Length: 448
Ligand code: TRP
Image 1 (cartoon, helix red, strand yellow):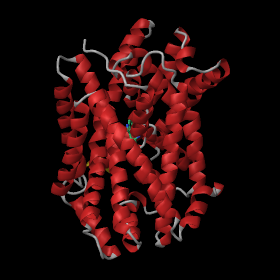
Image 2 (cartoon, helix red, strand yellow):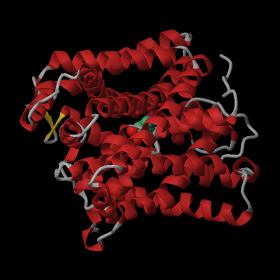
Image 3 (cartoon, helix red, strand yellow):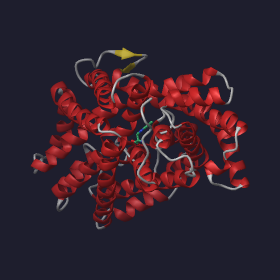
Image 4 (cartoon, protein in one colour):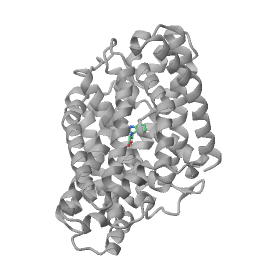
């Protein structure tokens, strides 16, 4: 048995978990789904989802990891054995590992776009470009398999190199530098945005809810996103939790992670929408908000190149600190279950994920016509993971933490909360979250 690594201290765990949570989901996806779903009202629903479902499941996931001190599969195996529960729970560990493969493969493709845009702004390639040219730049990138492959490969390479070095020498070191840089850049960008003419319009847009815009569909989108943004349901938080010492209390840490993640998403909105409004663009342009509308706004604003570099560096750091948390559970699983070293496991798993990623990037060009259930390969991967596998994993995690772990052992000190708070958590994680998750999965399968 290989030895179990430990975080050097609790703050490093907090930074790493925040690094996992804060990602493309916060900076790319959150602003555009807010834009597509009506602004303030959507944000309100999203905050409810974070509080009522996200946080209870996050606590459950970290708790299982910390108690088991092992990768997701072994965690379910060991705890189910110890508490004489059914072996069937192990399925949720396997689902997590498979989900990790699939998510990282397309996540890396999008992170590759961030790298490409960083290069473009560094070289000032788009200087003086007309809006139409900026639009074409993105379209051309998507049409070019070789360019997409190049940036996807670089991003996977960075991720593998960090994870291969291990928890203390790799992940911790990178996180300790990357996260402070991320916060600093984000604050600079919000200050810049607050100086633009569109700032008050953006504030009104983000914080004045129009309740007529809330529908079942927006609620389900908010829920799905709460899951994705907190990195729930595949064992990322579980593995990070497994590197905590057994006597760390998890509730306070979980609340901090959720709070910081939410703040970052809102700040990202505050950095992006003022520029969009100042330039008179539509907030509802969807996934291209960051890759067409934002560059267009930046090119028209003073110091646009500099702030463009800052924006895409921010996006890259956020994506990288999330990607390592998606690769880590997969690698830890292989490392613990086979004779392979961490280095070999990281390379082997990374290469398989890189290969799946190639099929995802071909969906934008050569294989655009290849459809699974009416979706191209990229959209299928996103749909299968975000709408089906993550909710399913989350369901298993919250049920296991409450019905098995909490009912058969005393976990109060592990959580570090009083009786009342415990009852609230238990009720939310055992009943409310599972019920709501079943609704998302139902929607994922039969409605969208
Ligand atoms: N939370 C990250 C984001 O918002 C993505 C992410 C990292 C993730 N690890 C995960 C999503 C595990 C689901 C599961 O971009």
